[in-house]
Length: 72
Image (cartoon, rainbow, N blue to C red; front, side, top):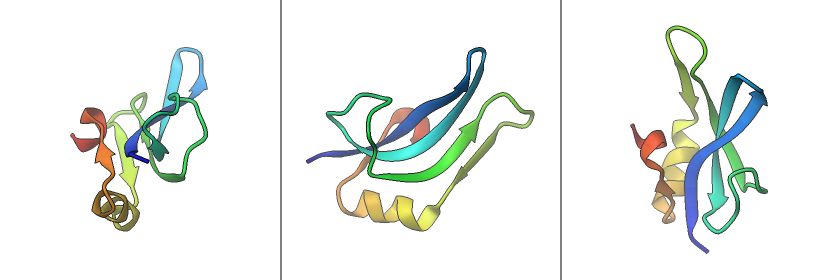
């Protein structure tokens, strides 16, 4: 099983909010995830991006691959 660390969309229409999750790479964006690692809110100024560094490092250590958006 390949693990991806990516954004999972939440929030209302025209008001996006994203959760940073560890998920099986074969699952859909809105599918069942393994663990929630943080959140990303692009609607506030400055943009708020918070992530649990310890759990992120764990998932990367066991072979998880962060998406381009999460790795920035």
